[in-house]
Amino acid sequence: MDQPAPISPSPRLRDRLTIPVLASGGILMAVMQTVVVPLLPDLPRLTGASAAAVSWTVTATLLSGAVLTPVLGRAGDMYGKRRVLTAALALMTVGSVMCALSSDIGVLIAARALQGAAASVVPLSISILRDELPPERRGSAVALMSSTVGIGAALGLPLAALVVQYADWHTMFWLTSVLGAAGVTATWWAVKESPVREPGRFDVLGALGLAAGLVCLLLGVSQGGTWGWGSAGVLGLFLGAAVVLALWCRQQLRTARPLVDLRLVTRPRVGLSHVAALLIGFAFYANSLVTAQLVQAPKATGYGLGLSIVATGLCLLPGGVTMLLFSPLSARISATRGPRITLALGAAVIACGYALRIADSRDLWMIILGATVVATGTTLAYSALPTLILRAVPAAQTASANGVNVLMRTIGQAVSSAAVAAVLVHHSSPLGGVPVPSLHGYQLAFAMAGAVALAACTAALSIPGDGPAPGTRRARSGTRGARDEAMEGA
Image (tube, rainbow, N blue to C red; front, side):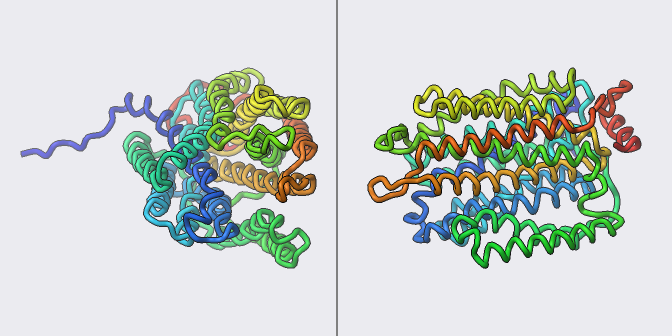
C-alpha cells in the first residue's frame, strides 16, 4: 500500500501566508525584548539578586543581539535563510522556557542572552521577502516587516504590565513560549527556503573578532553611567574595542569570503544608509525611554502624571498602531519618490515630533501626540532603510547587509540610552530624598534626539539617487527574479 504523501501547504496558500507569518515573527521578537521591562523594579525582590545583576537581563539581550545579527545574517546567505530564521526563533523560544522555569538570576541572564538571537529575525525575513516576492509586492511587505519592531514593542509593554500586575510573572514567559513555539512551527511550515545562496566557507575568525569588538564597545556604552565614564574599566573597554575592531577590519579586507564585505560598506549608498540607521536608532529609542519615565514621574514634580506601568504602556500603544497603519504609505512613497526621500522625510517627521515634546510635556494628550508623531517618522525611516539596502547590494548578500544595518540601529539605541541617562542624571533634583529628573532635563533629551534626527535627514539626502529597484526594469517574479539580481550585483 502506498504511503500517504506528507501534508504541505499548497503553493498559493504558502504565498499568502509568507508575509503574515514573517511579520508575526518580527512582532514576537519585539515583544520578547520588551516584556522584561515592567519586571525590572521587582526582579531584585523576586530573584534575591542585586539591582546591578538584574540590569543584565537587558544588557545580555542587547549584547547577544548585536553580535548574532550580522553573524546569523551571513549564515543565512550561505546556508539558507529559512533554516537560520527558524533556528533564531527556536533559540528565542528556548530562552523563554528557561525564564518560565527559573527564578535564578544566572539562568535568567543566560536565557535572555539566548533570546538576543531573535534580533536577526527582521533582516532574515526581509531577505526572504526579496527572494520570494515579485517586485510589485515586495515594497509594502518590506515596509510592514520593518515596522514590526515598533508594533511589537508597543504591544509588549502593556501586555507584560498587565500580566505582571494580575498574575505570577512566570506566566508571561509561559505565554511567550507558546507563541514562540507556534512561530517556529508556522515558519517551517509556510515559508519556502530561498535558493539564493552565496557559497564559501564561514568566516569563523571574523565572527569571533566582531563579537569581541562589539562586546567591548556596547558593554562600555551600557555600563558607563554605572561604572563612571572616566573609570579604568570603561576606558579599557573602549580602547579594547578600538584595537580589536581595527584588527578585525584589516582581517576582513584580506579575507576572500569575509563575514562583512567592507568594500561594499564603503560604497556611499550602503555606508550612508548605515550611518542613517545608527542616527535613526538613536532618535527613535529616546522616545520610548523618555516618555515612559516622564508620565510615571510623581505629580509632586509639577510636571509628572504619576501613571502606572500599565497606563504608560497604553500611552505608547497609539504609536504602535500608527506604525502598522503608515507602513503601506511608506512603501508608496518609496515606490514613487525613492526610499532616500522616504528616509529623509521620516527623519524630519521625528524631529517635528520632538519639537512638539519640547513645546508641551505636561498635558497627557500632547505627550501622546508627540510620541505618536515620532513613531510615525520612525515607521517611514525604518521602512525605507531595508529598501535602500536591497537596492544597493547583490541578492546573495542581502541578509548579511541588512544584518549590519540592524546592528547599526542597535548601536544607536545603546548610545541613545546612555546619552539620555547622562542628561537626565545631570539635570536632577532631590524629591523626598530621591533624585528625580527635571522637566528641563527631559526637554534637553528631546532636543538632543531631535538634533540627531535632523542629522539623519542630512545623511539621507546625501545618499546618491537610488533609482529603480533591482528587478523593476523588466517583468520578473519569484526566485527567477532573485537569481537575476544575484547575477546583476548591486
